[in-house]
Length: 146
Image (cartoon, rainbow, N blue to C red; front, side, top):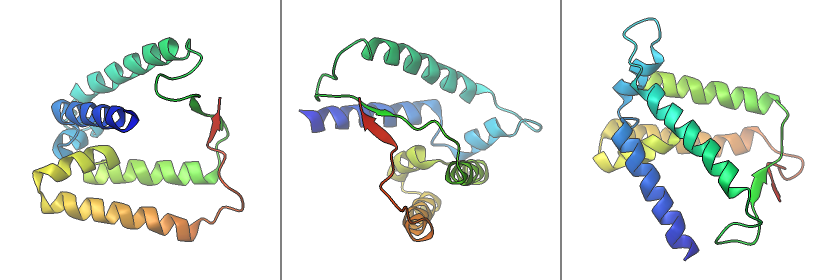
């Protein structure tokens, strides 16, 4: 049941990314081009996502436990370190240059574009390279059981 719920949520997320245009690099780059031909339509997508997340968190966290698990997994880190800054810079640069970030790129693979396949391959190389560049001295404390 748990795997089915993960699949359903992922499918809904993929549908939303496709419907909103976030799988179209030109639309994303147009949104990020504030001083050129700016396309503000993705601001509505982000605004809607923020509202749903805000309401969802308030509703869900009133529960003692999630429906399909015994405890919530919530992030606890609040510090800003060099890894966060470098990661955010790489993420934003890649998003601005290519018009993709990981979620929409994976959804766009369904279109069969060679450009998307190259982007996703490079993205996974980057994921693997990070593990060789940054070797944690202890396991990350990114999430704690609440």
